[in-house]
Length: 313
Image (tube, rainbow, N blue to C red; front, side, top):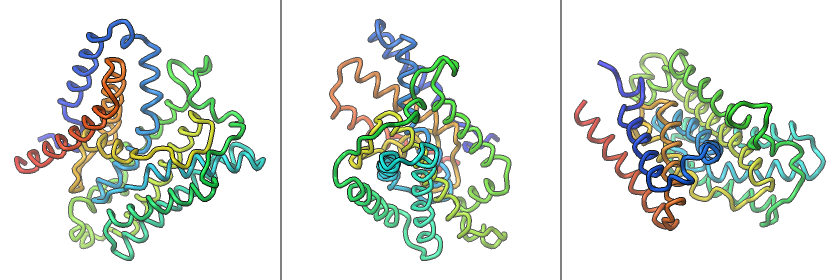
């Protein structure tokens, strides 16, 4: 019998196609343009990268509420370093590294201090947001992006979509291969499925948790770099509520909030579905508050389907 974690539900593909067709019929003059497709893919990049990291965390039985703050913090770090004269490669590396360290610290508290992931990452969310505001003196940091903005800019050097989107796809493929074919990937599923059994089987559970949160932090930092490429400023107030979109994308993609189930492909498709819905609502003229309510309803529906699936298995 094919396991749910081996591939996303067929219903997810159907939902994506049906949603696209509905909005294409409602706004045929704009929604079906190739430029709109490229725009949707570009705007999905940040959520998609964060959802890859969130997938690892949720499969391991955890949760990460700090991704939005980590993205904003990274934009501020990168902008501040660029403004100080540091090169773009070093500035980008420092931003991603700082976010990875924050993720590792959260993993350490979860794994070693045995604190609840919800509480740890809720605290990390506030700490990173406050650190971003303090570093930026509670204002945006303007600077010369020095080529980083090219990551999501149209370019004839890259086919179909910008280089940043190809980077997201490459990271997604790598993460999927790690989950499916490596010992570390099997250990992530084992920890999320039954931590006590994983310990008995010789899995180093604390090490797995720390590595997972560090990886999620690094991916949030990479997403922050793409966010900076879009904004070209360091904004400490950016990406508020992003964690909800990311969790929604992962849950819609088939991951179980109880741990032990989920796929990278499912999460990426979930992120794309969320963007199609958002873009479609914008083209139809639906107000932003309705979009927010729809996002919440989608999260609840996905959680309900997860519960029904687990009862039926």
